Image 1 (cartoon, helix red, strand yellow):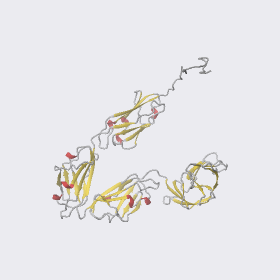
Image 2: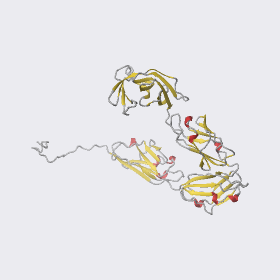
Image 3: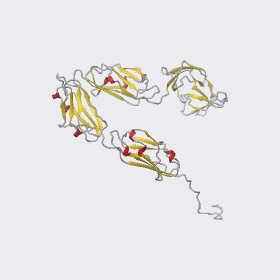
Image 4: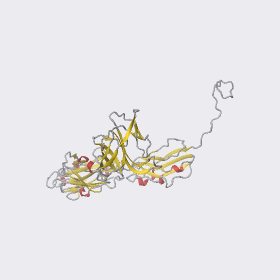
Length: 498
């Protein structure tokens, strides 16, 4: 028996049942029990054949078969072994519901055999079938792609327009899902709505080339190209899990900020005292004043004051100093340098702006929560407990040495078999201790954050404990039960009313 759907215009969207009522050696379905209460016969589709088999370069095949009047069922070798059936479309454009009326199996159980037969089969169930179907397959892949990196040729400044950008994914993607709609190009912070005829070509493996950006990237300025992963799918239909951006500057005529020194480490515990700025062309140092700078902590006010210094190092590089006074508090900082008011040595006005961000964090992580055992007391073992820290922590710093598990205050039961699995940057699952918590007793699992570090290297603090009791002793049978009033003849006859 199999769940099916009548998939007719008057279908009530309730499940129907496709069954084999007349015994035959191949256990072929011959009857459908409709949810409306009707019972109708099912005949076999015969002479099913496809125009080929599924391959990485051809995930779609054509199926033809002789379809009967009324209900028809087809069973034939699966042309897409190793792939996942995604869609089935009739020649009249109507889709067959995959999973209900079209499915694949890797074994069968005919009544003529005592056990299962390993065979890859395609099953198709249809009403008034057309006899012609398009089968769409996908790679049997549940792992989503990730955008890894851009080509190194975009580092720093560019002497001319950028026409092509190389990008690499963690796996090959479906090129039909990657085009100009997945790109965002900004010049000086403003999104360019017209990019021209952009194309994407496959290079090798997970590497691709985006071309056609020359016209949009010809003017001087600071550029950001961002690839949005949500619309880019792999062969299995999985969308890319992230976005990625690349930055470059072009300042062949006008001065442009092409680099602000990197803040290392980031996140960090220490203040930032100074940063260096590099321009694309020599500038007039007198035109580079404090008005070209802004420093903000989060969304707060501009912190630049008259004590900040700007010192020339070379005709194109400068050091911005006295920032340590302004970057002592924890938080996310952004320093922006605008070239709009700066002039080159030839008097040409600059364009664009560039920013550098970093995060200062001097506070260590604490334990926000340790999962509470909800059924307590209990008679089944605890399988796992989740712990959540106050911030993202370094998973390498959180180990078994930070755990303690005891029964009735006895020896530590933590062993190398216990596992700690990160679920997010701050949430971890402690598991595989169930085999030592099956005896009766009072159990306590403790987590000590003292050995845990955040991304900035701050040590954690605080502990948390989750406790529960294992009770395997059944209650004794009740005694002395009395029901009153007893209106029977005798108080000892067990009858309340006679």
